Every structure is written in structure tokens, then in C-alpha cells.
Length: 279
Length: 311
Ligand SMILES: Cc1cc2nc3c(=O)[nH]c(=O)nc-3n(C[C@H](O)[C@H](O)[C@H](O)COP(=O)(O)OP(=O)(O)OC[C@H]3O[C@@H](n4cnc5c(N)ncnc54)[C@H](O)[C@@H]3O)c2cc1C
Ligand SMILES: Cc1cc2nc3c(=O)[nH]c(=O)nc-3n(C[C@H](O)[C@H](O)[C@H](O)COP(=O)(O)O)c2cc1C
Ligand code: FES
Image (cartoon, rainbow over all chains, first blue to last red; front, top):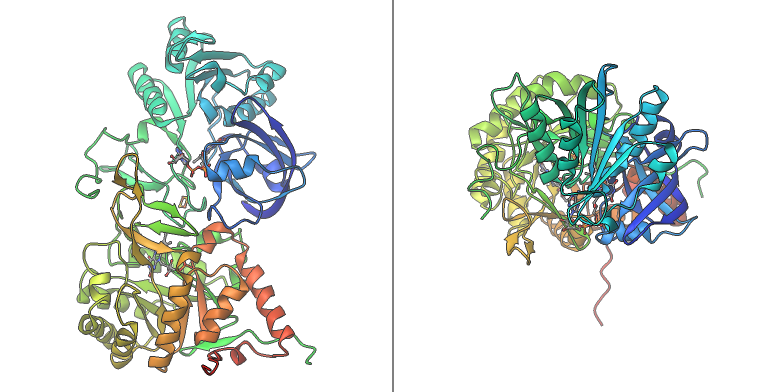
């Protein structure tokens, strides 16, 4: 059950540039949080910005009742969070949303991340490890500077395939390029199952690739969220299940953020209800 | 000094509220979303998301934009429709000891009356809030709320089909809100909700596009509180009906402003998104305030605004 708590920051690690790993105390998130789920959190008691922000759960420590976030400071809310000092308060509701679905025994889990989209895949690697499965993680960014969350994967012995658009680190090109190279080599022989989290164009590319190759894929979407619990209706995305004649707006916070990639109606894919509305 | 805790219960248009805090329409879903996150029985009441006869998609995204101390929304009344609400949601809400108000919408006067008629036999409805003030739909909504004759017509039409407490929700996007309050009272309203969102707009200067896909939106949150308090005060002086004060409430002092201005109870909107624990914090704050002022009953605060003589 999502639990609303006033929490405190217990540890902060500055990685390179705008990237931070933040540790908070929150028993329910620590024990119940699953890969792909998120929390809504806001720093301190300050009135601005008004709303909490969504972040994927990076890691959990049930024994200590703690969880971690990987945060890229890009605006007012994320900067306030990353400016917290240990001992300072935050307000946190979680765990929220629908997690990734575990792979079947005959499936090879391939985790595809762009930028801060790497966050859910550390927890996922741990969950899979607990079931005796080793995940392969593809981690792409524009430059090497965007790939700041490498060490925890190395420490856990999870194979990490890096890629950069500018070729400064790992595979030169898009993360989907690195993924295709692996698939073209035949993967590890099992049926590949894709899990993706990152910017929309990347998710769209993964969905298209999965459709082309007939692979199962789940994507974690990243819309603007106001409440995290299905009441503001600000986070809706167009979803069309196989049995449906027409898309419906679904809350990414409660029915996602993880969706079957084939169910997502991507912007530009279909006639948009937005036509004629935005003026 | 009394030793028992002060009374927070109020009577709103014949509906008993165990405290004056009610969740505002559109900011609390259908209530059931918060089951397990907070104890719904701690609320004085809740108002459902706006409901039409049929399900609605609502507006395209983006639908929300933050503004200084505020939130701009153009959700466009996405919803499941009144029949699904009555069938699926009301029985679940009945498990909680809280007053359930339904926010009634319509594209036409007839539709308002139809929605109200569907609810007439539905168990567990404490009252109807008539939404004549949504700025984010092309038909109905505001069109009924910024013309006193239309306001009168909608309220009168719903009055004909319901015996339930009838609470029109006033729009702040008018020049004299008292006129609208009187039109509602004349048409048979039992109470008033004051206010809905203020029509606003935000622009992304890089793309030169509106931040909301709909273009304009309704402004809520602390930014609108002074406007809402002023309007509550004006409405309280214009009519004898009980008033829900609404707009930017996020702490006990905010709620007290509305009560002092003449509201019988208050609704909490945007603050629900910020902190689901807001009700407990406000309840504690109200009790503290009453004790500190030597009062035994929240009703002793209502309409007690003092205007000092000008010297
Ligand atoms: C389910 C989910 C999980 C997320 N997990 C993480 C995570 O693990 N780590 C992390 O760093 N971030 C994550 N995010 C994104 C994070 O919530 C946003 O970066 C944050 O809300 C920005 O807030 P801000 O106040 O700093 O920026 P704002 O001032 O609100 O925005 C700064 C800029 O970023 C854009 N922006 C804001 N929110 C988003 C968004 N959700 N997607 C795309 N663009 C946006 C704005 O339009 C603006 O241009 C996640 C988002 C979702 C929905
Ligand atoms: C996202 C959102 C959706 C809303 N939907 C409705 C609605 O369906 N019906 C309605 O009468 N008011 C609706 N409102 C208005 C609120 O009920 C309330 O009147 C307004 O937000 C002012 O209160 P606040 O400042 O506490 O949020 C909505 C407000 C927001 C922010
Ligand atoms: S974030 Fe509010 S409904 Fe999803």
C-alpha cells in the first residue's frame, strides 16, 4: 500500500554533474517497492514548487527501512531535492504504480535505459538476481558524462553495455543500436524480453524495434505527474489494448508507469485528439 | 476552559459533517483512490470528480502546469459517467463514514437534470454540487456560470428533479459574484460552493506555445486564496445560504480565513496533490486555534469578521 510519510534524507552521494544518489528512510517503500514503481517526493517544507515530483525507486534496503533514488537535477523540484543535507526533511508517498513484469524462465531479460531511465534497472537487476537470473543492461546517453550510474552495476556484477551518441564511451550510437547488435548476435539464445525506461523518443524506438522483431517489450513512461495516485488526471497517456477499438486515456501513475509497448499510442502514431485543441 | 476537545462538527444544508473539511471536486478522484492512503472517515466529506451522463475523454495533454504557488489545469472533465459512478463507486464509498457529494455536470440544462435524476435514488449521496463553473470545456460549464439567467435556469431545472441538498458551485470569472449567489438562492439552492478555478494561461516562451494543450486553464492553489476569501465574504453578505469556502487552502489558518469570512465549511483541492496528510494537519490546527482562543465550537468562528472603524 502506498504510504504517505514525512521522511528524512539519511545519505547523499554526488555523482558527476547534476546526478545524485539520495537515501531516505521509509519502511513501506523499502519493503514493498518493486522495480518500475516510483515515489512522489518533495524536499522540506517549502511552498515552492507546489507539487511533489515522481522518481523511480533505485534500490531498497528492507532491513534498514531505507530506499534510494537516482536524481538528475534539472529544475526547481529536483534541485531542491538534491540540495537537501542529511537529516533534513522531505515528504514522500510510495510505493506507487505498476512494476515491470518478471520474465519467464525461457526469456532473456534485456534492460534498456536512457539517461536517468537507468534508475529502475538497478532494483530490477537485484530482483532478478534473487531469482537466480542475470540481467543484461544497456545504458545509453548523449555523452559519457550522462552515464553516471555505472559503479553499482559493476559492484553487483551485472553486465552493463554502455553507449553514447557522441562515441565518447562504449558503443558509438544510440542505445537501441547497442541492443540490436546484441540481438543480431543471437543474444544468449533464449527468447529476448525487452524492458525500457528513458526519454520518449528512445521508448518509441524500442517499441518499434520490438514490433519489428516480434519481441515482448515493456516501457516505463515518463509523463508529467501531479498527484501519483490517479486523481489529478494530469499524467494520462493514450493506451489501446488488443481488445479495444480505440485508445483510452489511462493514468500513467496507477495503470503504469510500465505499459506493454504494443499498447502505447505514440505521439504521431495515430490521429491525435490534440488536433484543433492547442491554439 | 472546557476539558473536552472543542466541537468541529457542522451542519451544511441539512448534511451533518463531522468536521468542516471536505475534499474538493476533481482533486480527490472518486474518493476510492485514497482508500488505504488516508482514512476517509476522518474527512467531513468529499466531492466526486465532475460527472456527466456518459464517460468522457477529457482534454489532450499537457493538462497541468505549475505556476507560482499555483496550478493551472485543463483536464476537461474526463470521467466515467454518472451511471458507472453510482454502480461501482458509491457502494465502495458507503464503507466509509463520510458525506459524499456528487459534482454534477452537463452540456445542456437537460443533461444536468438527467444526471441529478440518476442520483436521486442512489444510496449514499449526501448532496449535489452543480458545476456551472468549469472553465475547461467548450459547452456547458462556464457558459452557465457567467450569465445569471442561465445560472438560475440550470439550478431551477435540477431543483425540479431532486430533493437532495443542492449546492451550485460559483465561478470567480464574473464581475459581481453576489448576483450569481442570489440567482442560485432564488432558484432554490440549499448552499453554495465558492469558488471554482480562475481562468488563466501560461506560455512557454521558448516555443511560444501555451503550456497547456487546451490553451487556457483553471488556476488553483494558494495563489488564488485572497480572491476566494474576498468572494466568500461577498457571497456570505449577499445570501443566507451555507457556503463551502474553496481556494488555496493548505493549513488551518487558511481554512479559518474562509470560516471567519462566513463559510460554514471549506473544501480542499490542490493541497490534496501536495500532501495526503493535509487533513490531519488542518484538524489539529483548528483544534489548537479553538483552544487557544477559549472557544468550544468551530461554529463560533463562522462569520466573525471584524472590520475596524476607519479613523
Ligand atoms: C515514473 C517516473 C519516474 C521518474 N524517475 C526519475 C528518476 O529516477 N530520476 C530522475 O532524475 N528523474 C525521474 N523522473 C523525472 C522527474 O520526475 C523530473 O525530472 C522532475 O519532475 C523534474 O522536476 P523539476 O522541478 O526539477 O523540473 P521542472 O522545473 O518541473 O522541469 C524542468 C524541465 O523538465 C521538463 N520535465 C519535467 N518533468 C518531466 C518529466 N517527467 N519528463 C520529461 N520532462 C520533464 C519540464 O518540462 C522542464 O522543461 C521520473 C518521472 C516519472 C514520471
Ligand atoms: C486538477 C483539477 C481538477 C478539477 N476538477 C474539477 C471538477 O471536476 N469539478 C469542479 O467543480 N471543480 C474542479 N476543480 C476545482 C476545484 O474543485 C477547486 O474549486 C479549485 O481547485 C480551487 O481550490 P484549491 O485552490 O484548493 O485547489 C478542479 C481543480 C483541479 C486543480
Ligand atoms: S499523476 Fe495525478 S492522476 Fe496520475
